[in-house]
Amino acid sequence: MKTCLVVDDSRVIRKVARKIIEELEFNCVEAADGSEALEACRKQMPDAVLLDWNMPVMNGLDFVKALRREEGGDTPVVVFCTTENDMAHITEALRAGADEYVMKPFDGDIIESKFQQTGLIRAS
Image 1 (cartoon, rainbow, N blue to C red):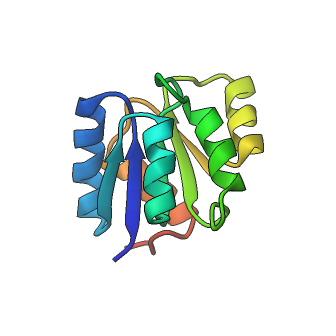
Image 2: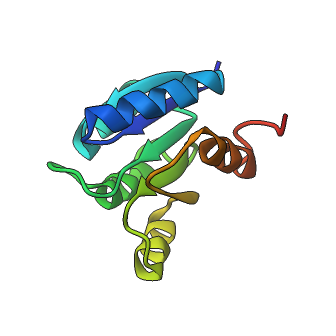
């Protein structure tokens, strides 16, 4: 079974994302900020990362840059999931190593679609 790391400082968002991701038949691991997420990746590299931008300690952009420098860190599919929706933010995220970008609020259909587009799951 594939694993998805959900990184968001909101416990509510993590809970909603976990439900969606588990319905897509992924194991779900949670982290409250980029630093916690990086530690989780060092223990076991996930197949996917659903990543918030604005978090304390280490934000999503700094996390994805650090992740891509880790051994095996080029492997996970990183999907930014944030309220930051201007082209400058999206471009910056993709240049830093993100694979896709989702706007909050999100739902199961949006996450499933992005996971299909990135090859994490097959179309049903």
